[in-house]
Length: 170
Image 1 (cartoon, rainbow, N blue to C red):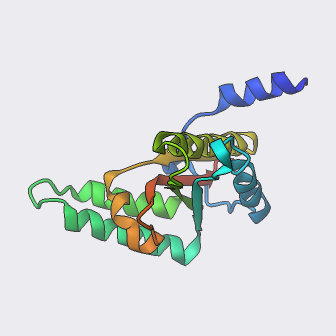
Image 2 (spheres, helix red, strand yellow; image 1 turned 60 degrees about the horizontal axis):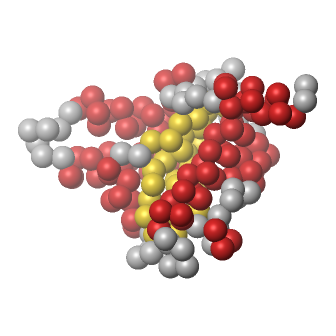
């Protein structure tokens, strides 16, 4: 197939695939490395490379899930607290093979929206690479990720834009 045809096919096939549809099969490290390598090829004004990614696997991933559950419980008024939502946090974390945090770092050299746009393009590259490898993925951006500042070591000039869940689907 011609490159343009292959690219169009991958773009058309790209979709959010949620953890409930992931298998237990582990994603090979070389594919995770490729996903991240392709992410950082995204265009960015003045070469600020504003994206910051952290990969969560195994125990670190489970700790992230526990922290997200604790944050949800802490910030949700008792009358609004939903046990199902609390349980879903743990379920999604456990079903994902890998979770990648998406953080933007604002350089001050360009408008903030350009840094967010560049980070979003990096995530699109991740999504397209996952699609090419038949890896399920989706970008989740619940409000509670803003409370992950300590575990992600977010600095004053950074903002967490969400979590990128990955899992095998074959």
